[in-house]
Image (tube, rainbow, N blue to C red; front, side, top):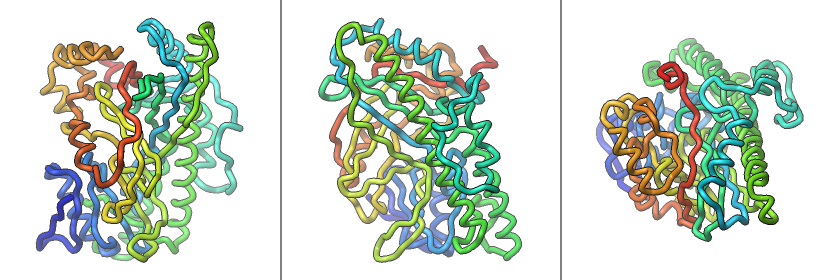
Length: 400
């Protein structure tokens, strides 16, 4: 960890990323100059430029909540489960992948033809909020993957067991709620002559305001919906594995883990209750179990938090991008990426140049990322990718 201080920052920036990009540092500097920011700004090893706040950033705020410091995909996170299966062939994994493809819509804008059972949704306890209006449409997106860096992945753990890891969020519900409250925050900040430049993208809602309390309720609902979404997909993948492997013996699953990485919550740090915003960062309290994925071509990890106070008890949420999607498509070589995946016996879906935005080389080296956060987490299980399932973007579908 190193500390960045200069005449342009009100608070120090503490970074576990050895060489953070200029855009992330600029955004962290904006965070450090917020009048309500507390103690310091923390940047995890996977940090890179986001919108308003860098991905892999942690902001502690006094008396306010900042919608863009949570992000548009509210409640996005990871879940994981391991099976008792220790032997499989390539055709087994492809059969599982095919069955999952029938049950789980993947890609941006994709949804089920029929709505899911409403009982699988988090309970709506207060009428009049935005998520109540989005409840019915969300029934069609419950159990869907989305696009971008979201994935379902079959993995082998360090014990040789077949495992499932899923990365996804709150789909369209989270996006709409984020946009709605960001507009309200901008209006409130303009009304009360906030000195925070709107171009920073860091408009805030006072915690003691009706709007601030409503956002917290909506955010919490999205976190629950995102978990329900991952659980529904997890059931589909478990069922696919069961159908493929049940002729060979009993199929069991255990050690379910879930952890979000886009949310805010009240926590006590350095003797004060503050609103901790984690945007693309994961809670890593002492002995807390977490998940840190690599790219679809590199290892992922189950970790145990060390409760480092200086990181606000946080760690990275993954490897983190080292180049933008457009840059990846321009700079990376498809044949090289395919050759590397094949060499590691990964049943990937890289086919065209448009897929390069999610190629392993577009991400940071996960080994370096894990080394940089040895004081934040310890590794308890190493996960090797076997068969990643990715969702297509609308752009990919158009070009194909």
